[in-house]
Length: 387
Image 1: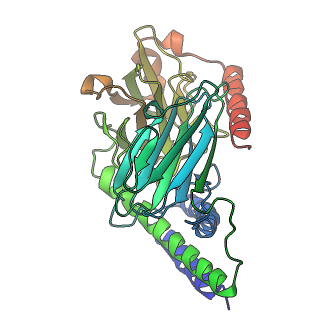
Image 2: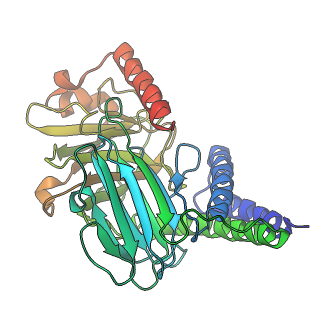
């Protein structure tokens, strides 16, 4: 049958989920099968989007197609390229905090991170007064708003990053190949569809294997319940630094993460599950930006990671995950960060937070106020995912 290769890949994918090394409980496995569903959907989308002559942007990850510790504050888009063709990207700049572009020479694999051939943000392009812009990617040219495609260029990634979910508005973005504009791709054939189903199966297996291996490279070799100093993010995002770690906490424990409020346009923290994907950020406060967080009088933000509700505004909900990943990001930087910009951390008893937090009265929040925060998250995510 035409879908035989894809069906075989589904069987292998289920074995990968069931055999994942971190699975300890039935809940771990249930979440894995949910992650599998999103990965199947995303893999089919990516296979059908593998169109380098008539390209278009697709959303790489979202609330229901998660991968790679996706940032809840970011809209991710990608399109495929040929290194010897010229592409035109047009759009309008929204009011989000960061818009960046990156050219990769391939995709992530279980043994490698793709090289970043070009990476820049909107400060390096000319944007008209009305917010519109046009940038070109191609071989062997240079000039304003023109970026060279180096050997091996295979994918263009665009990221749009929010800090204030309720107020900032996303922009628009479109890609076309310069020499095929106004033409049409050839009609579908059975052979092409069979190939796409086969490619979707390969993407699915690679995706699962890659992001189960990825944390071993950058997280799990670190001491538990700690965070690194700020460092340039692996993968070539030229204006992003990050601090990473992993936690393992009992239900009566809390990890307090203290970090100065940065002058960077974007600063955010998130939690992730052992499947290396974001926790539910739609219905729970599992991430916070500097704009969403409550800042203490000394200019620092103190986040409390715990299962039990500590009654503070900057609670990051574990949502039943006793183990998981932590990542802090800073973006649109104009300078390299130092250890002084990074986090301090300690594990305490939840019952001791009143004496541990130096501005506990400033941190407190009522259950009704916290419910209002969740309602605002739900509305903001729903709004930004449309269009």
